[in-house]
Image 1: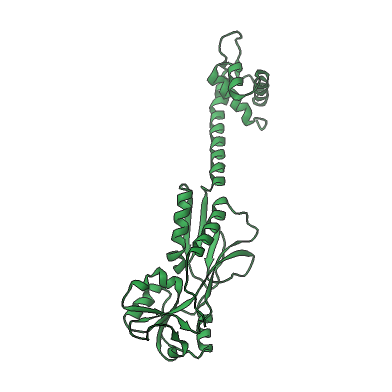
Image 2: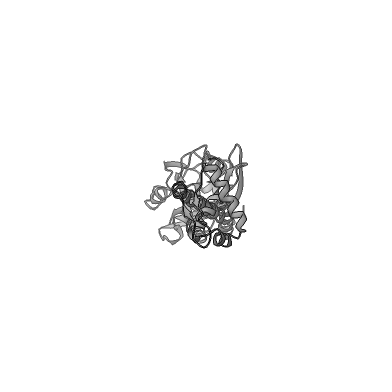
Length: 301
């Protein structure tokens, strides 16, 4: 039975549907002798005749063995057609993609990536997971956004520099850029000491600014709520500020810092050597396009 080929089954089904070897050959684009050879090969593989051949103008008829072969053969042909369709859809981008993300990328960059992917490939299956571990792993993910370069066997594209800005209650500081030394000893709410937060706080300290941290939370909205409540100010990356629409809140003010702490860097990573699906490759291109369309403020020293 391992000698049965799809083309043999396709020829058999065409003969049954058309009623003759000649009409089946015309439909399939073969010669009649080629169709006869395929049927002969099928009969050798299954160990008996699949057609009664009455000759003349009378249509060929299935033998009992032929009926069994046709029933299962049509199921095989349907599965093969389904496989071909699935492969075509995969090549066109209608596959599945698993993306790891984090808070501010989820709010600002990823919605545009997802919308454009779904506009281009309505049948695609997009799976998202949001975590911010200290040492993220790509694992089974196709793509992973992270604020920094990952170690290990990974490749990456840098998307943008994300500058740090000061968010304070209205009237806390004069309008315009705030010198870093003014933050020394002032109450501040901040992220936990994970990801890029330690290097940012070290940069503040190197410039003589050692704020008094009164509260830490990994949720940007929580930090901003505490700023509104007057607990302290916050130094947050621009993506987090944009994602929370801080500029529209008249209780808050956003200030550039002088000198500016080094920005955090947003990267998109994937496993080195892994063959990208067309969908994953397109997601990388779209993420680069979306990041290029964003306009973080330029903060000079």
